[in-house]
Image 1 (cartoon, rainbow, N blue to C red):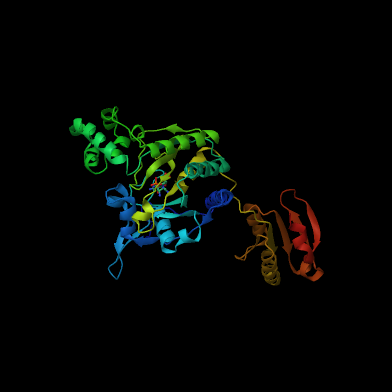
Image 2 (cartoon, rainbow, N blue to C red):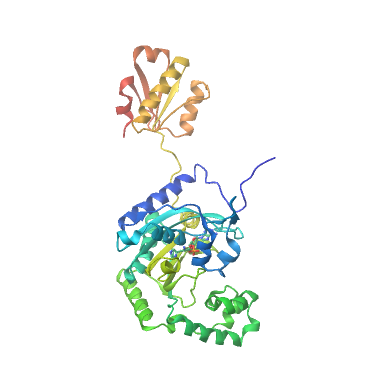
Length: 417
Ligand code: HAM
């Protein structure tokens, strides 16, 4: 029997993983600049945590979660997103009592049983941030700035930011009624999916991808035009701060997003390099969610971004980095005593932080040289009986071809850049 990886999951092989590491380094760097601290939560949680936060009737909860019963019959779910887990940890560990504002970030795998396609996987990776404890619009904008800084840092220049306000518990119910009244007029001509949404989540009818739905809802009222004073002012401030930081954006009154917890600001960053799955990142404010999950009423805001999508955008922008490992030294050994010596020396140099390789396949000197070349080693040193007896050997600079005779005790100094 041949084993294969599960549909919608991917191996990240050497050669590709270096780009992931570069992206992760950029994420850590930018997050540190904004003073966010990393948080790591378990891969699985109680199913109810996600049902309660993301919303029972959302696509994620109703059809995409990897949910299973463990041996004690408890319903568990592989996390489809991180916000719920972060807030669970925030409440569980009383983080709100330790500081008035908690700013955390994460990078890790998430799981959704979606139909796999380019940029859409069943195990994918997100990086993101959550700021819990403040209702300041500065933080809404900070979320977009962090994401955009990471993209720019990586060399991605083409993206667009769309923002909207989805209101709050004060202004949304009345608006919803108005919207439903309007949608009822053309109800029978809407797609079956939108018809179901009219009942459960009418706002999502507005961001239907179905062209006919879009046509039919062209003149539907939008939440952003029916905000209460507080939400309206917040939305104006967000726009002013985006302008003050010279962040190009557009207002998209139909932007709703597929998670139920948002209040006030919702945003999405898209890239033209991505094709149909064009969302690089999404986020927004969730001022009711901490309370909904059993904590004290605490406002919050955050975003998450797809790692795989970042990497696709990066590849399209042509700024994928050099894939070599940066091998400093290859020690080629001519015979058994030299192999022993090379093994011990390599250990010594590796302990000093150098990347060093030796031969493990009993290859001839010639083929060891070929291997050093294939791995783009910066230097090669050849040792055999004579070299061990004399205590010196030839060091070859593989870039310039230059050879120098070297004391075997002085290798570290000679190869250090
Ligand atoms: P989301 O829009 O569901 O939001 O996901 C955020 C990003 O994750 C998407 O924009 C996309 O780049 C990536 N993504 C989602 N599903 C997949 C998939 N199946 N394959 C590949 N990439 C995917 C959230 O998850 C919220 N927790 C964001 C948030 C944080 N809101 C507030 N705080």
